[in-house]
Length: 410
Ligand SMILES: CC(C)(COP(=O)(O)OP(=O)(O)OC[C@H]1O[C@@H](n2cnc3c(N)ncnc32)[C@H](O)[C@@H]1OP(=O)(O)O)[C@@H](O)C(=O)NCCC(=O)NCCS
Image (tube, rainbow, N blue to C red):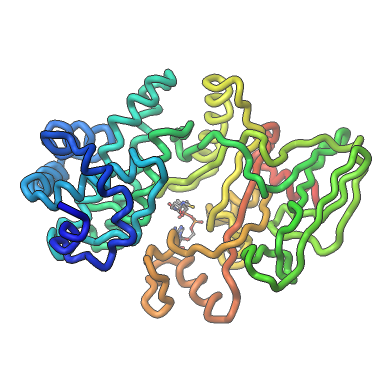
């Protein structure tokens, strides 16, 4: 069966561009007895590892049987899993078929079965790194968090958002673990990341924008291809660092400064190891929960990867948007959390995590929470939404709760 035949049967020929890559390679690798992740025993094991309750068994087993007994769906499920976990390049699945015309109400379960099948690989990968089983178990909860999002988007149905499926590849090959409330990915600080210095005597932390960042008049990041606005410079010599400082509130200041190099030590540079932080859905955001998670991460990674010592926590997200402080009260969990971090501007305005619409449409966007209503009103008034970045230096963990970066900068 070639890809055209398969997609015709799935009423999805128009999605061939997204689906076709790797079809022949995946079909050559299809196991004789079909994909193991569609077998009942494997489904029950994956479901349990991913922390779903037994109440989903009947739906998972029933849909898997429909897929197993239909050659097109069986081949397509294998292709999806192969692209997600085995292909040399990562794939994104937002433009893959919904499969509603063939699987009806159970369409979301197709991708959920592929998603929870990562449990076997992740467990083997973690065992090889001597990761405690409790941490593997916590890390394997992500498909359930994704399923909560799917349920919100699809009136309580079981499934996984196609736009989130591709993320699961990381857990099978990266140093990426859930520790308490948050997930952390040990990796180098990205090439165009902020440069951070600490004053050798008073401890003050100062971040500089990288060279070539494009900004608007308020110091917020524009997309790199946008030719409007102005551009930052950064010059680092043995004697001085001259560049555009970043307010810990998340915007670049308009005037350059020059600081004497000997009085400041490097605290974070592109290429240094960081813990790239991710916030799974569900579980709230109380100070106790998230600060305990960050402390756990600060102990866990050096113990397991002593040659890759992270210097900071870093995250790019809607959750570190400086706009949130204009829209939510200071006592809200989101604002209390972000005000403990050093914010910096990043390009992008991704509203999916607030509205969960694949195509954002203010006319139909949900208005259920105060945040949703505030963001919609803000956009209606003509303001732009900005995503945000944050860092927290490892050595400043014990200052959490004091708003350290803000109080020492102001
Ligand atoms: C982190 C999280 C638990 C914070 O929620 P919280 O503790 O309710 O935060 P706050 O107290 O600051 O919320 C203030 C208001 O914003 C709403 N809100 C918070 N996060 C929201 C979200 N992602 N979407 C819509 N509304 C949200 C709350 O419901 C509350 O509204 P209310 O006044 O009508 O009750 C929540 O945003 C979440 O689970 N996010 C999902 C994960 C995520 O987005 N990760 C980032 C990926 S880049």
